[in-house]
Length: 147
Ligand SMILES: [Zn+2]
View (cartoon, rainbow, N blue to C red):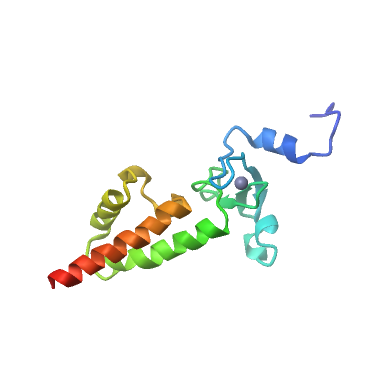
């Protein structure tokens, strides 16, 4: 890298360098580039050393601990909000003991039509996450009508 004509890394060249394992943004379909916590959470110095994949649209995701392997795919605020609502609706199903955790995820896979291997709320699109809330609401309604 000593004879690089343009030593100043531009957005494009950084994205190209990282492209080997760069995840694709679920919001805009662009390839993300690797960055660190300073770019994502400037007010959280404790996260500065963590790696993140950031998209040009502002969507991002974290990495598996100690690697640059993306945790899912970069997503934006709307998806993040929909996922946290999905967790808030879904987690009580197994936390409360209504279902066992594995059973709850099998149910979730059937209810959303997302294959069991891929059925993680953290990897869902906003639309899928919203369908989790609807499915849980329908399930609880059905349960209460049988009670
Ligand atoms: Zn994007």
